[in-house]
Length: 461
Image (tube, rainbow, N blue to C red; front, side, top):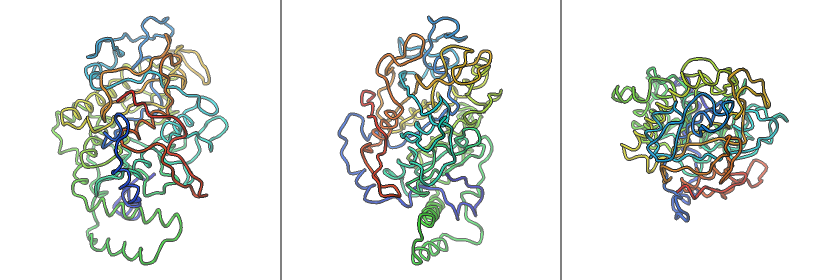
């Protein structure tokens, strides 16, 4: 995963997943005829990853008839879809419910304990975390990791010339001290790693990361690339470097992409509609990048998983204590404002039909309040709960205004149409027209599938 800090970094490391894309694979993917409902309708994906894992019961799947120790402090409210209710802390999304569908039956059993790391890896790669600790804790990313969703999309769909195919905004994916969990390109090489912009977008983004030094021209950069090609490759690290270099050259050659990063070109009222927060402005930047031709933009909630929840717009969703005041006063207002604005903005601009929007955490929170299942839970807190949680999905051919699946009366386990996270990953590929049965070779020349198992949820389309 790449973080650009300066013009020099950009030129020597690069950030766009276009160079290194195998042309035959790209042409084959684009030439393939859709064979199932909804396949290939999406041209881009905005993946809102709510790292830290929000409580499904307190946001998307209220249980007003459950005992007080389960239903919590928030009341359900009506939405624009008759019969579908959200929590009172999501009033903006309640007004946009006719534009999205809720999957209320996601669930899995991560390897080891119910920790964030394993669940993150499963969600963001579609594979079991075989290299994790026995307790499911994350380990630093390596070149041997299985690629993230964004890297797969970069490899098999690419992007228009000059646009970064795979972008990460908001902040790095973190579990404890480990950064980059499940977000790198791994086996596919650095050319498909995300172009990361973790600067605070509430402030002007640094123009130097998208500009050439005064003494350098595009012609000189092309000459350097030609010289490197003449000298030949030198292993995986050399290939990664060349991919990065080509990505940087492509980005610097694209005025349209550089323009996308100028959020100051947006009317102030629209920026206010998204919210002047790191997450809100990252969602607005994601829309601009999709317009500029990017294929996959992941907006990470700024605070990492396994981070102590604190007050403020960027604090963690990992609410082992004080769940209700933190959700009511901070987490939900920021998320509700940004996500509802994004859906409305995409719809008004005619982009929602071809842009798949996914909002999800790595798991949900325990139904019983204040009771520890695997971790120390304080008063008013909810523990980790991978057995059942909810995902918002919209656009890209998905039928809006629906609910797919259902949890039981306590929100503890899927009751109807259970969905594994790998099914969700397969659904993203399906929407983009990428055959989930596609395989590639790892460094030991073994075949690797895009998803460990599971099938797309064609019933969503």
